[in-house]
Length: 184
Length: 163
Image (cartoon, rainbow over all chains, first blue to last red; front, side, top):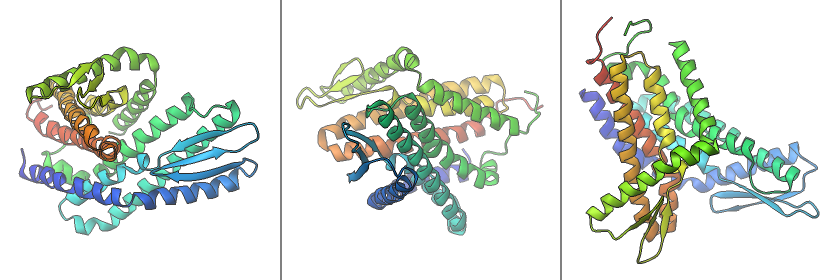
């Protein structure tokens, strides 16, 4: 195994617990932030919908209060921001990490923005389905959105973003990548 | 390169769609979850645990606390991402086949470790269990996939004939 690659793996073993600890330490800020932003959007976008919201632990509950209906949907913002510590750990473990602080910051903001977008989409779909059907349980469309956005925002993008930013470095570690058109 | 990225993205979308297909969850992922429960039980018995395995459930006979391994906890999503990445990379089929087999084992071993740790955490603290289950292990599995992929990329350079 190349030395730079093995050193990076060892640094990753240190940085990931550190980053997830910091991320977890900020859970309240994340939840309250998502709660405030989405409530603003909901009030502006759906003025006729009667609802109240509350935060319990790390979940946000939206209670629909239309006459004759008592429905609740719950969304967990942390399930969408959990890709951020992965990305931070990857960047932190990379050599010369301090010089990368600006690109790291942009990456975190991008992941946070996409996490909020995914959260809003899932919450809006669940609320819409609850109002239309009278059930508080998600249907396939909200479930598919949940799976797809979590897949993308918490698994693919943190790693994809790091690879895109550190492509040349990674190629050096593994001795170069095969080029397109190689006959194998 | 661009078309390989497009194929990769397409495979990921396909994976998301397949993952929400109930029939696949029951017929393929269900048995995988039971296998992982059985493997976890074998390992724990080897260290003197009295855990009882029943299908995809692991139960502590003393506290009666149990965990159930559902399809979302089978590591199938991480495995699928790795398979898609290896499949689209321009390499010889022998190296790809070994990569797929090795990658599957790497994810399964990590997932068994996850199941065992969650079993014990469930007996100790619900808050710790929830944190490890929902957030910590998800990240560790993805990093496992990335590290394996990088190691495979380095290894396969010496395996396939140059054009």
